[in-house]
Length: 113
Length: 111
Image 1 (cartoon, rainbow over the protein chains, first blue to last red):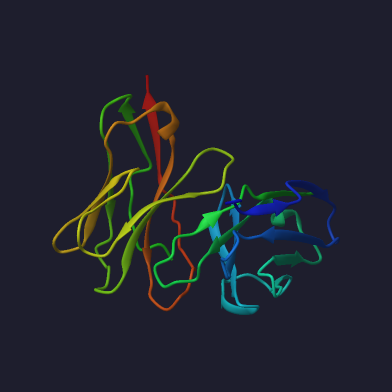
Image 2 (image 1 turned 180 degrees about the horizontal axis):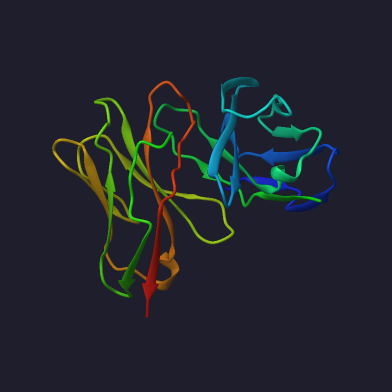
């Protein structure tokens, strides 16, 4: 069974630009979560989508948004990029059951210059 | 916020058991304990989880104290590939897959 696929793996943007990251979950998984990882703040929850609906949202500004498609693939978007948005963005999929574990992708490493 | 406390770092000799402690003194009765690990530059990997009984799988064992205020993850025969940051997480019910990872324990397995 294929794992969680994130694209692109690496990207460089400049301040003020926007970026879209993509995540393809494991086949059959209906939940997709996004996390941001930085050296200073560690792993922080951004949001979770389940069956195309946002189920939970972390404490991030509105510049961070996401969506999920009918095939469970998900995208997250960051608008008006700031230097502090430089991070590893991780996507995790889950069957969506109450005690389902998360399966993480390798992440998309964003550098904002 | 993370509801767990872990030592920042630990060493373990290769082939020996690695015992990683976690304190979660404010845990509620319906909150599960999860363990994940993250090898450098990779996404976190699920290891094991439990509620109040001890659990074992092919990767590790989880020992939860009777009062549930602490737990220990045991890697029975540590290898160099077990060098990673280990996260102990208390999962709050009704928050879906919103996990608070905290700072974790950096385990170094020494040859």
